[in-house]
Length: 198
Image (cartoon, rainbow, N blue to C red; front, side, top):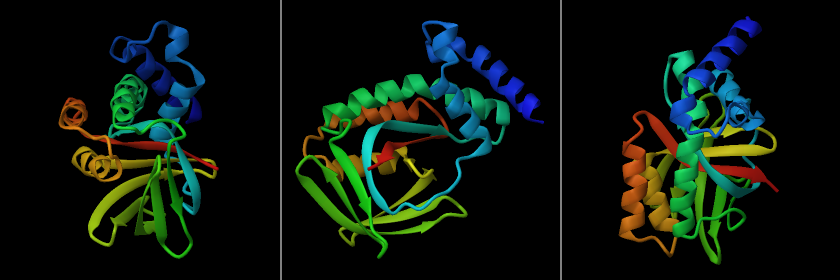
């Protein structure tokens, strides 16, 4: 069974080569892309959200029930992540400059630069879903892919735009429109943040 899954991933990676805009077969089959494809099929193991998590880049996940499409989508997401990283940097969300701290008492703090926003959260590890409530007013649902060292905090594209507007002091209409059009160009895609545990 493992061999069959490996071959499916390899075939998907090879078929998606033009769409992923890789420079070479080596770029396409690097460890990061293979890990994403395997995680897309097998799912990440769920771990506790508690702790401080620092932003390391954007995260994108394609929603599909078809295993081959899911693996190919994970490989193709690399190009979309690069575009999203550019746009997030324009609103001040850069590697190491944003963090989320999730506490055991179901409170959290989101920081971008010097700006902090507090809220509450609930997390269901069995469904990998979290509900974040910023300032006791603005609820956002997120999908959580979490291991002991890394976490992807993923939102539907319209919810991500709302969150970026809320936590970033530098957000402007043209950047938000660009992020929105990027999200609309990929059907069934969730956007968010790749975080690393401190």
